[in-house]
Image (cartoon, rainbow, N blue to C red; front, side, top):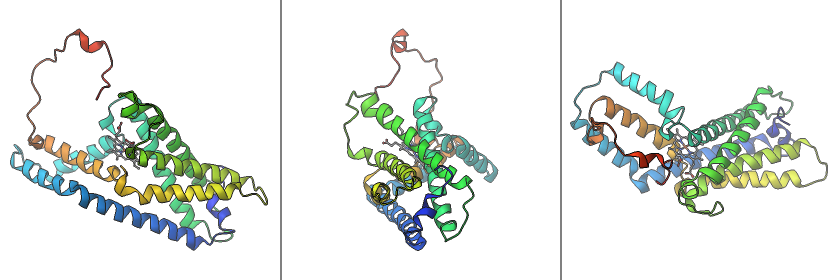
Length: 266
Ligand code: HEM
């Protein structure tokens, strides 16, 4: 199963152009959903206004080379390894989900657009990337949702409590999980059975929820967060610090009580 391109098998019954149109529709939903989200939240407008205001209190003018260096470091650390989440499980789970999703999406696009025409041979690396990406997303996403969500981890809410904020992570896990199950059932070649079609329908529905629900979900953080990290680090380097006061130059003295429990009540 892991080295079979599930979209090529599907192409026996569904024309490749239909699959390709579905991907194009998902991309359009990302663009429209993110645009409406930014208009509604006014976050991008605030972001640029704030960056302009902070620039006035800069103590140093950064050269182009310095800016490139700050941006490269931000990409390599803040963005590529989600360093904002510190060392620990939260970061590991996020990195698994993030890279899993990227592999899953890249694998889907490559296989759907280049390897679904009749008689085409898919290099096995692509189905492997797709299945591995889906598995990583399911593991990282489930780890986060069952054990690390702030309302469960820190606020003692039951794990089965579902709120709107869970829309993104649950739709993400569902699309990868249903994709995996569909690919597995399809690879069994169960003649005259409907099992794989049910999971294909669930896979499609999960994608429609994931990409169609951007306005209501946390999907767009994957675009906002990198922008915010670059702005924060540039503001650090030019001394404006987003108009925040400088860090105190004094030893941290919290007493021994601080060691009694790991800080997790946000
Ligand atoms: C393909 C890209 C990405 C995917 C699939 C992804 C996935 C996720 C998921 C599923 C969550 C949990 C959402 C929730 O609170 O319910 C999350 C949270 C988060 N993401 Fe991402 N993410 C991506 C990119 C990024 C990037 C580029 C950054 C930072 C530069 C980032 C930073 C964060 C942070 C700080 C949280 C909050 C984590 C927490 O509450 O513990 N993400 N992400």
